[in-house]
Image (cartoon, rainbow, N blue to C red; front, top):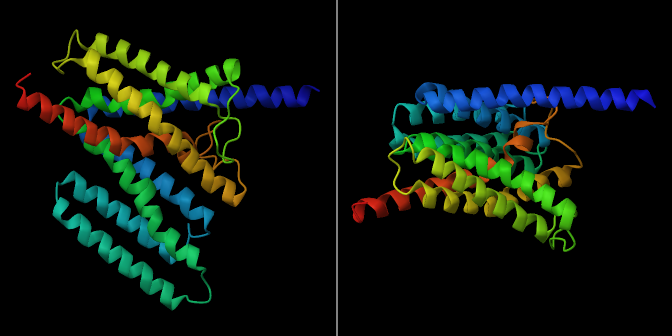
Length: 283
């Protein structure tokens, strides 16, 4: 009887320690910005790509090497602002992966060929929007909403689902999720967004943060549900609980950042739209 309790205590301790370390790295590099934030987002991309490739036994293959090199080149081009070379880079990667598929025909499944390129789209391209959002005007404040909205809504969704959950979502991917939990997650994100907006309004020049932040947080809460379910769908297909144990107590990169990756491009384009609107209105 004591062994499971000791294991639970050990896992809880690991989860708390790794969570604190992750939070310190995230917030410190996000505030610093520049190369520090680029390296942090690149780590998310590389970790997510490795875990996704591992699902299809590609993590140590020639296809995997192409993926890792492409990822390194992708973030280098972003940092030096050579965005015109991004499409040629991915076209070259796609052609190389298809050549490898031809050369290894009979040794590779068709789904592995598809996964080799999709891996670049999912964790790599999506994670780059964290870096791009940070580079926007007021990006140091706006980027944090992606993380706060995703993780806070997850906590509130669990809380409301546990207390009031009766109507389950129409999906077998995560049968415990309920509509009450989704609503609770949205409400929690809006409250946190409002509080965050009121706090930063005292020292930032972001226009109407008490309005912008809750709206962004609400959209994050809505779409983070799909990010979580999309990542879970791949795990269900492969019969695994976690993508990896890269983050002790939390699972893998794709376990911890699944919702964050999904909502990052949405928040980025919302911010572009909102900031442009304020410029037009001279607010």
